[in-house]
Every structure is written in structure tokens, then in C-alpha cells.
Image 1 (cartoon, rainbow, N blue to C red):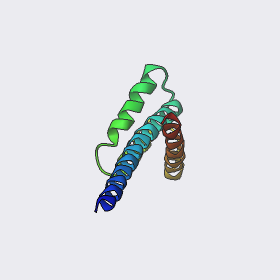
Image 2: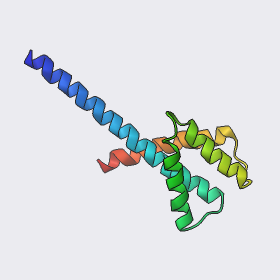
Image 3: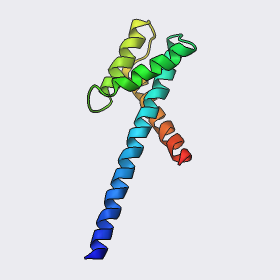
Image 4: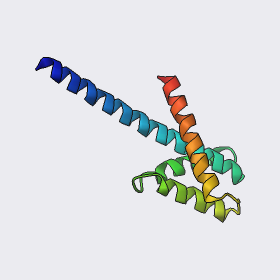
Length: 107
């Protein structure tokens, strides 16, 4: 029975670790996305960091990435920056890969 308990505990630990990595990578991706969008909108200095924080916070509105996409796309549209849905979503995908690589290299 002890061996089964050990396997179960290991699986729970792995699941918890993976969820933590997903959360950190998502938050890092949102920060990078905010910085990317801020650059496109012509923001500089502290305004870039402030906007990146807004993008991170937008992810807490609902489950999934649609809340982040809607915020960034609406802000880009408002500033007259021409980025299609595909371009923004592709950037989100690419930056998630970048964020995961960064998080893994820090461990």
C-alpha cells in the first residue's frame, strides 16, 4: 500500500508543479504581450510597465485567454494600430512559448 501512496503523492506533486508553471508562464506571457502591444501603441517608460500590468490583470476576468485578447485588441484598435485577430493571437502563442522557456531557465 505504501508504494501506491508514494506514486499517488508523486503524481499530485507533479500536477501541482505543472499547474504552477502554467500560471507563471501565462502571467509572463501577458506581461510580454503587454510590452509588445505598448510598443506598437507608442508607449514609453513607465507607461509600458503600467500597460503590461493592466494586461496581466485582465486575465483574471474569466477563464481562458479571450479576456486578454479582447483587452489588447480593443486597445490596439483604439490607438489605430492595425493588427488582425490572427496576428494578435499568433503573438500570444509565440510569447507563451517564450515565457515557458524563460520560466524553465529560471528553475
